[in-house]
Image 1 (cartoon, rainbow, N blue to C red):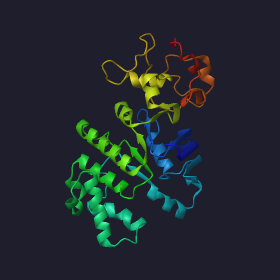
Image 2: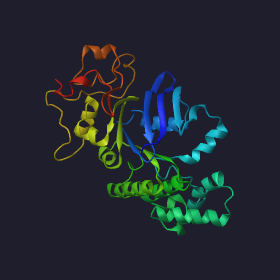
Image 3: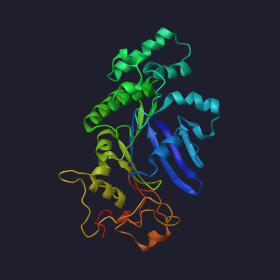
Image 4: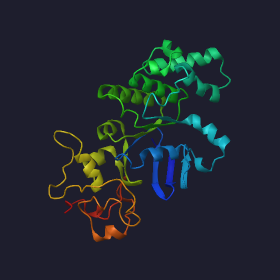
Length: 320
C-alpha cells in the first residue's frame, strides 16, 4: 500500500445553494480499503459519485494514477472507467431488467475489450460468475429471478470482470440480511486479495467498516471530521461526532462511552445554519463560543490521525 492511487483535494459538490460535499481531501493507496462512515444524508454517496464523475463537482481535483479526472476530456475519462467501478446499494435496481445476467456482465467486455471473440467473452462471464459464488448457467436468466444477495453477487461480478484498480462500494451490504452481509464482505475481501484492487467502502454500519478497512474517514454534513487508521479510530476516537457514532454501536461492552453528563444533543442533518462555524456545534456536548464563528480545519494531531475540532488538543484529558 505504498503507491498512491487516488488523490482527492478540496472537493466540493453543490446542488443549487446547498453544498453537499465541502472541501473534502483524502488519499487512497493501492490495495487499501478505506471506510467512509457517517449518518444518512452526510454526503457519502454524493462524494462517491463525484469521484467517478457520475456527477460534476463544483470545484476541487480528483487525481487517479496521476490523471486529473475532473479535467479529463470525455474520451480519456471513458478509458479510465475500466479501472474505476462501483457497486450500488440496491442490487436489483442497479441491474437492467431487460438484460440477461450474462449480457449485463459482457457489456463491459464489449466496450473495453472489443477484440474478444464471442466465445472468449462467454468464457470470461462464466469465470467471474463462478468466482463470485454463482453458477455459469445463470447467465441466460434475468435479474428478477434472483434474491437480493444473488443480485449483489451479480453486481460485484459486473464491476470486477475488468479487474479494476479501485472499487467503490456504496452501501453495498446495507439492504441485505445480516447473514448474507457476511458472505458478501468475505467475497469482497477475497476479490481484493486476488485482484490487488483498492476499495472505498461506504457504510453507516461501523461493525462492517471495522472488519474491512485499513483507514476510516468520518463524514458529517459534507465534511470530513476525523481520519485515522481503523485501529486508532476505534480505540481512541477524538471528534465528539465519532465518539457518538461509536457509542451508538450495540456492543457488550460498548466500544466507547460518552460521559453521562454530556449526551449528544438532538439535531438533524440540515445545512441551513452552518454558514459559519462548526457544523456539529448544535449537537456537540463540548461546544465552545469559538465553535459558533470559526470552522475548525482538519489538522493532524498524531501520525496519520486528523481531526476537525477546536478541542482536539484536549484529547489526552477527558473533555468536559
